[in-house]
Image (cartoon, rainbow, N blue to C red; front, side):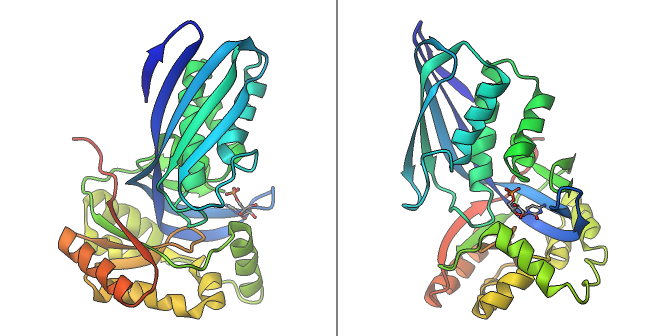
Length: 309
Ligand code: C5P
């Protein structure tokens, strides 16, 4: 976070909104609100959107929000369908009065949308962090507001690595002593999160799957030991099933990522983005090139978060 200027009638703050991947995602049941309860290991990536917010004008009850999006696909909304706008509205309800007349928000999109990378959630968390601190909202209260915006937003408030439970809002921080290379693959097919969970319910209505058999805990241990082979061996995502059921050809993506040199590969969240993990940049590049040769999707190379020493 950085405050760039301060004047009587104008100030600007900016921050990053990093993407995440789910290294493991096990569905364990349903919550009282009708969501799915999860056990999921999430980790932040270097790939990030950027957000800059400028407050202008005399103080008012609520700010007029003007959101401008640069980059990304054409379909990134700039009205209340965008979680950034909803986050500001929530903060305005929470701390009424004394707002600038207008908030100009410039969002530079680098994280693909509807991909399972938490791009929209990261943007919402970034604006909550920036404006929440300025408005003096207690961090715990900010996390409650975050949970109202979406299941992944609480994790995005701090990022790093965590085991998420409940519908994603109960977090236990994990260590990550090593950083690995990540190849992201975005196929043209997009998946809506709500559809993905619903379809999982349908596909498992008769016979609930056996569960992840210790993979989530195995993954958390391997991550904290910096053991890439252990992480690769425990990658797990229940939501791959509905996505592969709808688009069987997507099976090729993790196969090609592994053949190209990645230690392991998996779909992230509710998809449809996949990731491969590699220990060297050369392996990551080799895998990305293999994906592009086969025309399986757009690729990015980035890294996983690592804790500061
Ligand atoms: O919380 P979020 O807005 O990301 O969730 C989108 C949709 O995904 C929810 O409306 C719900 O249908 C489904 N979902 C779920 N269980 C979760 C997270 C999301 O059923 N833990």
